[in-house]
Length: 207
Length: 207
Image (cartoon, rainbow over all chains, first blue to last red; front, side, top):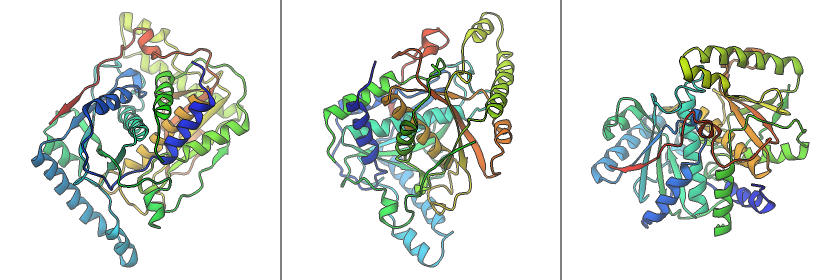
């Protein structure tokens, strides 16, 4: 299929207005929207066509609460590496929207799938996890195109989350995601707005 | 910005017609197109807004040849895990377009960036590499929207590529990419067409 300027400009808008969202409205997400997001995620690239991502939608209140406690402990520990103004700045950042987001998705990688028959991952076994990351990013863009926000919570003890959700031994946590309507829209990363880290130049160098 | 059905359908087309391309035309890619791809890649999410990806465009023939030799050795080794029909099938697959693709991009992760000040990666340090993967996937989709194909070559000894390209010790290889015009278009993965691995169902499970 020959793609057009319309495709290019649409992708540009989606990329430019995608944010890591931590401020959510509590409005529920319709099941048919979630199904469209699942189907979009299934179009992600994967090594050996193995599709190693395993997605749990965490709805049980006690499980969500246990994940929130895991985040809060990890975030408290994380704050201790900073001193002075940087510590004050860290503590003032809102780094997760776990309490308000209507949808929690725990995304794991099956580390020993039969699918793919080992192709493409003998010298770089991390390609399975990288496939899951590409699937998460696909979901992120598809959500933004539905005017939904996604936040990736990485301030977690992943082993703890695996135990809370009692997943098979061959699954490892790749990303814990919050999904819902964002409270506000922006085309600049929140960490740049809050002066934690500005956008630095990215260059390609010839060799 | 409120996105529309046009955005959603455009993204759907891009996702559906994105392939891992191994069959390239040798036509060069204009510099202004590469610059648009670099700018699109800079819109990828990154942990702590650290933007840890470092991109080398490999143009020197001897360096490209050394990477090809690295791939060929790794691919020969990889084939030895299969027996019988599966080995014949493996050997018949074309798994990289390194000889024809006009552009080779070696994408590394800076594992110790100052940027981001450590935010979001204390319990999951792999988030830096995952940020680079999201950037590669962003590039992939942006390339498809320009009617260009990208192939991710993971059958490589990554340490060997780091030595060939003589990168800083703090850089690790995340992906080696071929970029160019694809010889043909498809909305089905080549490994599914070639009956190596069909598309398996992906489900979301409530917990």
